[in-house]
Length: 355
Image 1 (spheres, rainbow, N blue to C red):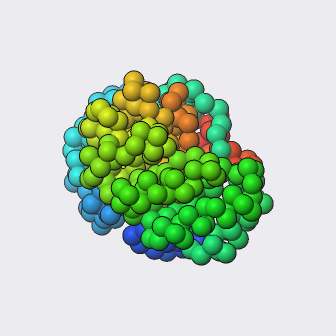
Image 2: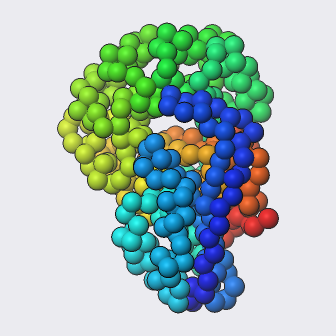
């Protein structure tokens, strides 16, 4: 079954809740979309939303990579050459992970629709459901508590708090969250490279009694040696995020002493499901837990990440809330969300439908 046509377009999906992290404020959500059509009319859709700060790719660069002349090599190819096609996509776009992700996801969706099974079943489903974090940006203690209350009313029990601008205020926000909501919630933190080594150790010590589940990327991404120098008990709750882009980064992070006990995998960093699973495999053999994250993204790529996550036995955490506050989307369906838990549907492929 051959690939007949590929369409590429972009949409600003909007953001109903602009928020601030350590290095910027997010108030728009521009995604690139790819739709692959097979000879028999089956379609597969993919999406990409690059983070320039993390991977050095802008949306314009993503769309430029996806121009017709660059993706023409896929036209006429048999979708049953699935693994080879993904390999060629990876080789052709080394500097465009979100463009690769969009193509990779579309290929995965088209191929598993062609097979008539959900993507997660094709990959080998290990997990049925997990609770996702819902993320609170950097804001005052009062506003943090108010937003957390709103999420809890909606059934979410895992709150991720963005940190990294003011250590004292960060500590206060976490302590107040635990004081107000008790042990009824799980608290995760993400400093987005905003701390020094000493601040990381201080934050860990000052919040130790409130049982923070994990601390995501407190140190600058390239300071791997500094991450490895943290006390072992601190590294046990550290999730490597911006330090982990490729499988090669994963290998560097696991060299003794391990820089982190948790790997945060994002499809937009590594370039799609294929490369994400390579990182996951490295982690599995080194007893590293997986934490699947996202940018602000369409249901398309969020669902793809969920299917990949649930195909990995070492997946312990998900933070796939990137489509919850979109103003619009180009598809419906995809993942199932109930009482803060995410599940895959039993529909073929990603289970999404164009609106």
